[in-house]
Image (cartoon, one colour):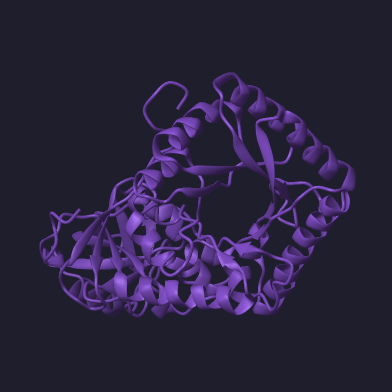
Amino acid sequence: MTPLAHTALAEMTTPALLLDSTVLERNCEAMARRAARHGVALRPHLKTSKSAEVARLATRGHSGAITVSTVAEADYFARHGFLDLTYAVGIGAGKIDALHRIQRTHGARITLLADRVEAVRAAAERARAIGARFSLLIEVDTGGGRGGIAPDDDAALLAMAGEVQRSGVLSLAGVLTHAGHSYHAEGLAAIRAIAEAERAGAVRAAECLRAAGFTVDTVSVGATPTAVCAERLDGVTEMRPGVYTFFDLDQAARGICTMDDIALSVLATVIGHNPRSRRVLIDAGALALSKDESAAEFRDGLGFGLVCPVDGTAPLAGLRVAELHQEHGLIACDGNSNGSDGDSDSAMFEALPIGSRVRILPHHACMTAAPYDRYHVVRGTGASVHAVWGKAHGWHVAGPGA
C-alpha cells in the first residue's frame, strides 16, 4: 500500500500517523535479542501496530507466531499469512463462529484464552455445534487483577483443565499471564520484581497442572516493561510484549526506553494562534492523539503529548499539547497557563507559524494508533514518506456471528 510514498511531510493532509522505520527496526531487533538471551520464543502482541508490515519485522528470523486482541486483527493477520495466533482476550462464545471461519478459510491455528469454567463450557458448546476445534490457554493472574486464576489456586486450575479435557473440541495448550500492573510500577527495581512474580506465578500454575497429569506445552508471559526488565525466564516458553515496537512517552517516563526509541508520532498542522488564551491551535485533537495521560503518573510537563519539529522527534523545549477538543489540540508553553510571560508567547507563535507542521509524541502508542487506517512511514529526519502501510482497525469482520 504505497499511494502516498515520496510525499513531502509539508504537503500531507493532517492529522496523519507517522512511523519511523529506522527506530521500529531497531526496537524489534533489540527485543528479539532479549528473547534469544532468555531462551524463549517471541510471540509479539500486534494490538499496538495492527500492521502486517510491522509484524514481519517483529517476527523476522522467528516462527511468525503472534498475539492479537480482536477478531478483526485475527482475520487481518491470517489474510496476510500469519497463521499461528493467540487471541489474548477471554473468549466469549459469540466470537467462536468468526474465529472458526478464519481458521477454516485461511488455515490458521487460533489459540483461545479463558479463566472461568463457564466460559470454557459455553465456547465448547458453540464449537461443537459448528464443528470447530481450538486449543486454549488458562489465564493466570500474577498481580494485575484484571482477569485470571490465582497461580496457587490449584482447585480452580484443575477444574479449568478438566473442563477443557472433557469438552472434546478444546485442547489444553498451557497457561498465560500478563503483568499489566507493571505499567504502574515506579522504578526499574519494582518492575524487575513484578517480572519475577509474573514468571514464578506462571511456572507455578504450569507445574500444578503437570503434577495432575495434564500436558502443558506453553507457559506464556507478556508485557513490555517486564520483557525489558526480566532477569530470568526459566520455566517460561514464550513472551508477548507489544508496545516495544513503537514505544511512547509512557515507557520513556519510567526508563523502559529513551526518547530516541519512540517510533510513532502524529503529524499535525498549525491552524491558529490565540493570543488571548496563549495557545497555538493544531488540527490533531482527542480523536487523533487520544486523551491518555499515562506518562503523567511518572513525569510532569507532558500535557497530552510533546511537540516536535516536522523533521524529527526531539521535543521543542517547553512546548506541550495542553488541551484537547475532539478535532483541536491546543499547544502551550511551560508556565503560561495563566501567567503573563509575553516573551515566551511570542517565541512560541514565531516558532509555530500558521500553516507549519509539527509532530506530536503520544503518551500511549496503542491508543493513539488504533483509530487510523494506515501508517506514513519515514526514516529518521527524512522530510518525505517512503511507504504507506495499511493496518487493521475496529473489532469485527463481515459475516454472521462476527
